[in-house]
Length: 516
Image (tube, rainbow, N blue to C red; front, side, top):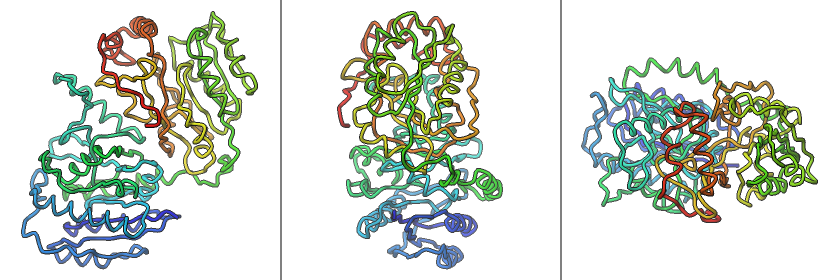
């Protein structure tokens, strides 16, 4: 049974603390061994009384706060004001919780701020993310006149846009990237970030490797969470945010009016479908490879299919009007694996959403327990063979997401401000849930390989990486550049800037190290 320590340093007004404690008491802790720890750093007797009366039905204990700080924490202005010494004090409390977690054999420590209201499934969701450090997102108007923004960021003190080393961006590009980052976080998923905090599950292995809130003295960052994130990155510990079950941030007194609406939405969302549903199987699941191909005989198709044939149970291939030997390559590469090739009488490539619906319907007809959706130029690392059965033979989640690397040659992938697909996880392996709508948007390009409703499913992330080989030679890049210029000249369905960058003469390339 997984042991989790839920911990919070508390210096909070009683009207905010009450809803926070109520949400802790309502957490779904089924199948978990949980204890709660607080540091009572309050100067409000009413808050102290609330805290010590708290009874969530699991063990609760208190760590001593030490001498009073003698400093005020201002939460009454337009934004909260923390003195650096108070931040260091809180960082010290958090490190005590981390040490307690390791010393007493907990599998993870969930650090949560006392001005949040949590969704009941938060702990389970963060554990299901399967990463060393993961925060649940919440949204805040840091100043009353500003839009809601997340508590996670990409780099620096609080920059909400990806930035490649040595890049210089104008204001328009910064806004575009920041808007794209914020929009991404509105879609349920698990995403890598550069900074996080306030609602964070930290696994034991991360703490043992040195994760800590101690001040990094030569960077002069403001806030103990920044020190934590910098140290984690230096230790090679990736940071992720989960966006399935956002918390409610009671940043101002007026936010208390939002609690009833938040609870109603959480109740409507409810927990994931019961694990005992008859269509979920804990063993013996059948994986069907689903793929669209078109004139791939001279590409990487044979290599991709032969590799996939070593770990899938069947395949459904939709041939989008090929005029070369693509169909013959499919049959040869999948020899010995049950498969079907559906040849379309005319190409639907220029209307991708139609093509994806055709692919979806034919794949469902093969009655898969899981669908693996790959393109003809995508190949997993060999390690997929060691992971795939444990990924599908379970009843906890219905989607598995992976990171994809745009290979620019046999040993290097591209990584810069326009090429950062590898920084996010995308669903490639999905259990088809009964009744899932084929709700693709009417997008002629970049429609997405699964219906958008797949993003609502409970999911895990997998560390096995996917190599996208579709950019790996000059010839391929020139052909794709011409194709996108022809099919999407204005960048309506993608990014015109990225299309233009395909032919960059000196792109930033990073070694794809095996096993990293």
